[in-house]
Amino acid sequence: MSMKATIRQVNAVTVVDLSGRITLGEGCTQLRELIRDLLSKGHNKLLLNLADVTYIDSSGIGELVSGFTAVSNQGGQLKLLNLTKKVHDLLQITKLLTVFDVSDDEAKAVASFDKVASA
Image (cartoon, rainbow, N blue to C red; front, side):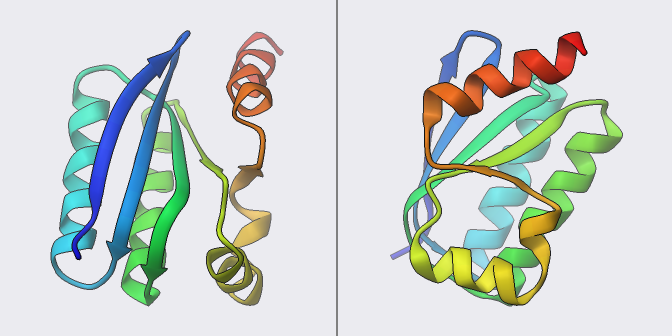
C-alpha cells in the first residue's frame, strides 16, 4: 500500500493527514512533491498527521527532514502530529525528536503555530 494524503485547512495551518507507507520510492516522492507543492502555493505552516502511517523507512525519515528544511528555508514551520509508537521510537533513536515539534493534540499543535508567529 502506497502513501495517501488528505489536505485540510485549520485556521492558517495546513494539516496533511498521511496514511500508508512512507518508503524509498513512491512514498518518499509523493511526500516530497506534496510538501513542495504546498510551499509553492504559499502554505508554510504544515502539520503532518502521521496517525495512520503504517511504516516509515530511513528514506521516509530523510524525506521528513528534507521537508522540514525546505519549509524552514521558506520561513515556515513543519510539525508532526500523532506519531505511532514505531515512528516515535525511530525518531528517538535517530535523535530527530529534538528537531521536530511533535504533538498528540491537534488543537494544541495548531495553536502552537500562532504562538510562535506572534512571538
